[in-house]
Image (cartoon, rainbow, N blue to C red):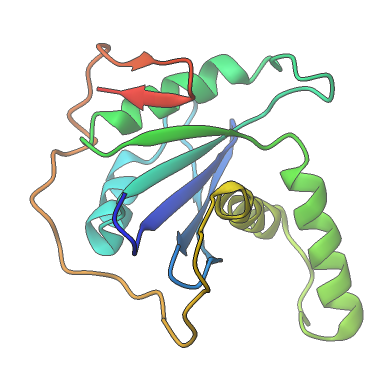
Length: 182
């Protein structure tokens, strides 16, 4: 991966998908949005738009493992979502996120109690912040080996000519490292 890696992190759920952007220059992540699914179908146009806008080098998808490390019932859907994301031509990695929603809820409660968040917390807030937690977990696990530069901002990039995620097929595989290949 290049030194300055931009990533999009997804917290997949049956009703909503939280999305965050992160980057390795500062080792930080921030919420972007929460997308609503229609039935079992993610909003692929919105996802494609986010990929075009942010031009990430990597896509992260939280894998909701049980507390004992086993697969939860949602893991099959998450793996399918990750495989479909891989059709964008971008690398996709699965990352254990079984505590991300609890961490997000805890952060939101603390923000509300401190006055940093004034409006009522809604479920979409938890989903987007869960995606931030997923990105932060990946960034923390990554061996930076260098000091973080200050002052870098996460900004959307110009549109790319990458393959559309809307044009998906069922040819993707999940290798043992959690990487999804197209």
